[in-house]
Picture 1 (spheres, rainbow, N blue to C red):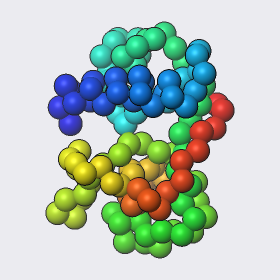
Picture 2 (picture 1 turned 45 degrees about the horizontal axis):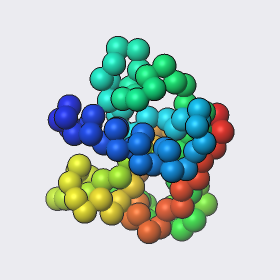
Picture 3 (picture 1 turned 180 degrees about the horizontal axis):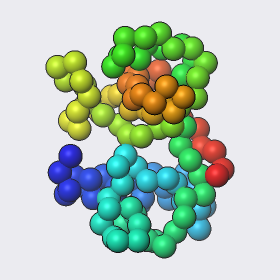
Picture 4 (picture 1 turned 120 degrees about the vertical axis):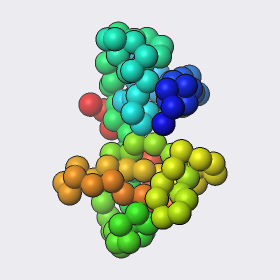
Amino acid sequence: MKDREVIGFSLIWEILVERKVLQLNEYLEVYGEGADFNDASSRITDIGSVPTHSKKGLINNSKDILNNLEIENVRYDFERLIGFDNGFYANIPPFNFALVQDEDMEVERVFLLEEIRFELQVI
């Protein structure tokens, strides 16, 4: 992903999403890869802030499109919204898929956006 895109997505995440779902002085984990804009932080705003909440994606019953696997009742770490093109995910619209990280299997998974429920967890 281009540096400009990463910075733009990170800034939108911090201003539009984070401030909508959290109180002041509460912060989400970085969006996607983070901005790496500042030496001390992957954030664009409030660079000294430490995340207070993690973002999770709950899958009740859905197909992992990337790995062609049915998944039931699992909670994953949400990474970012993505498009899907030519058999792999991409940073292109429409952003109707969610990229999640399966820490147990050390693999990325992709689900249709309407088949994932987002949750916040206090860190």
